[in-house]
Length: 277
Image (cartoon, rainbow, N blue to C red):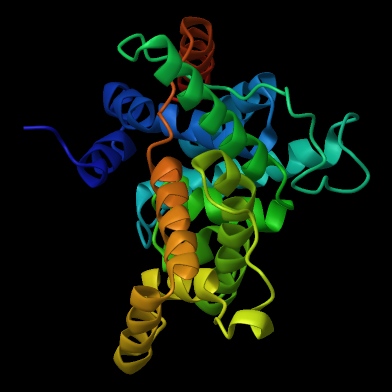
């Protein structure tokens, strides 16, 4: 039976190097993906991964287990991503808007050899659009969306990682979801932005649907929303496009760590352990 993170943590605290290496290798691909999404650069993501693993090894005995190991790792990784963003000489003075990137800019995607060429091309176009949309968010919105909708943390866990209240997390999350949905919707076959609400009498349905996902809407309001969706194809389409956008976020593949990155992290960890045991 596979040992849990907590079991590996306790064993590693007792000086078991194999347990430490197994614990960290279990989380490395997701931390690498997280670094890619936040830093937008493969070399920076590699550095963030290695720095995070070493920081965990260094602070192993001080971690009291009040949060999940994964939450602890994301918190450390995000701090290194923030440092990378601040130090990068290539960082823009102001964050780009969602439509400021070049249409042909490529995203980091994994090809699927099982799909027909036309379907694979359409899939890459959608993945590129999603990557550009997430990359175009301001960091405070991007971090929340990646943690919640890509990495799958709960809103309280995201708040713990970012040092925010759950209410602040949800507020940023709704705004990020609307922005990403608006950017990706056209390539999914939906209108990008709704007509002014005062012309149709429609509520801000995309934001409401995001609030519904987070359990913020009461049962009576939810019922009224469902009644409106049944009678309004335009709003129904906007909710469908948000659902599809979030499904794409959740389906973001966990990258296979390049062999060189794996070797570098393993070497750095073993060198650290040898020097401190």
